[in-house]
Image 1: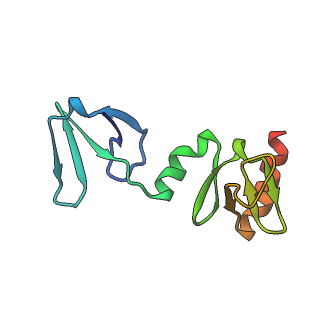
Image 2: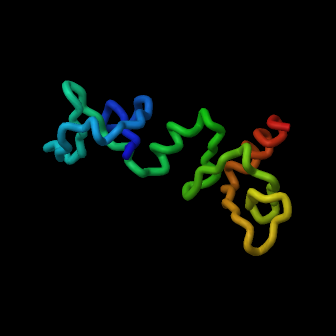
Amino acid sequence: MRFPVTRDPGNFSEVIDLDLRDVDYIETHPSGYVVFHVKDEVYYPVIPKLSVLEMHLEELGFLRLDRTNLSNIGKIRHFDEERSLVFFSDNATKSSKFSTVSSRMKKILRDRLAGKK
């Protein structure tokens, strides 16, 4: 099994796909962080917070459209500006997956979508 980790507890460094079979032991550090020990190295699990994911996924085309979601700009098929929603299928229906867009992000998203075409 593999597990996403970084070399720093704040998850600011590159994400590494750690093979858990290589781990010597896992401990909780006095500061509260979980630490994976592999030989002379230590690794920290990627914290499942949107802000951490945002930092690492921006280069892959993900954009924080509001405080609750990161959306893959390359997968957006329709932007309903009136309802502040983006859809990920060509024919949006009531059961289509969507993400919400904050008022602040509307123009930024519009510009990004125009630039990708």
